[in-house]
Length: 489
Image (cartoon, rainbow, N blue to C red; front, side, top):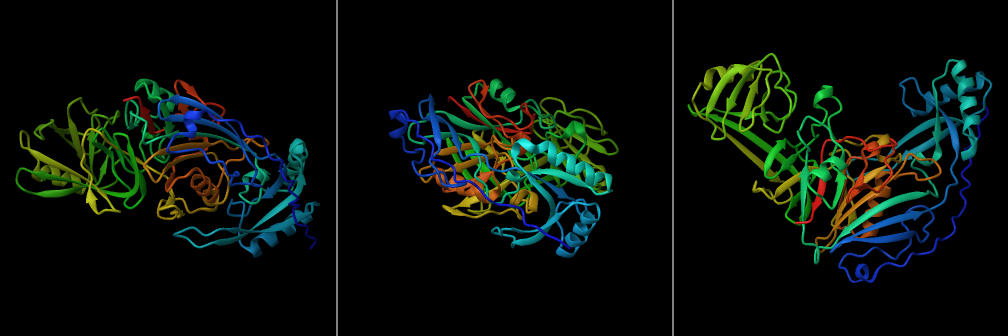
């Protein structure tokens, strides 16, 4: 069986001139680095700086050049674009039978802090320049006609060696001179998705970026629900996935840590039970708390206990109704409904206790009005060193760790300054995005001692003033679950 290796001749990109920065930026306690760009061929990037307000600077950064082209990737029987060596060899034989010349490519997904490296094999056909995508598509059509499932791949997305280019926006917020505050926003409700622009406009924010991942595997009307902890103005609006990375915002401070939450309900008769979730769809036998911020009806097929602000049971009803302003609802089905029948009665009091624990300090957070929490996607940097917790944070796949995507990143410097960055991607020839390791390297280069990856892909958006300053990969700003907003006071 004939084989050929995909060419990897990557041209060395010429260094780009450095744009002079305003003197105010040079005097700040958080500064844009003068060192070479940490990705690609290590050239000096171009950058333009704009002073947004006292203590906040926006940087428009460009680096790298386009040398990647296209190939055709043959999918494995599993539907993935990679598999074991024997499976890849068998697929390659089918490609040869179809009259094309395949290449079996060994790919090593690098290890992360909580998951070992992984070796897989891909089958690819052909190599074309950026301008010859149609030729790649023609070969793909030939293979499809032979009964093979294939896709046209831009090699810059692979996560392997590349020269870029990269299109990056960075906001640096100086802890010494900034006088505003940081908050989380879920928009008008938990269930509804909104754009960062909409949420930023409503709060007159100076800067906004998309927040954490939201649940795309629930009912369509509920897909604004954050996957992980969400606290807005001191109120827990979504429970944590225990141990996952989050950013805790209080006033003008930001801190990255891991969280767990506990919610309990205690009836007037002294009986106590766990509340399984907050503002999300209920599974069988679960007790779920719904707050007035939910923005959707409680699930049907169960029992609702409606509580006023003091915990008094003002109504017991069949489920499937909205949560009125000034109330909370304990919804139960199955065994949880039975607990409500046995221990919750009209005009009784039910105490709902909420606890959010910082796992790095083993202390509960005080749920004061200035406390906000956004659940991150993946921890990237801890104490100045790369520490990618992809498995713990639910993203240890080949696609998430190795392949490049648009990224929204958050970092905190040694003196508490905040760094927000978006790396645009999925635009062949214009910007390639970043994988987890590149994202971690990039944030360390910017000066972050702690850093996390927020939601990315088509969700990546940065708003400064009233303008989206990056270029979302969907072609337009996507509605998302939550946002981090920088307020003027």
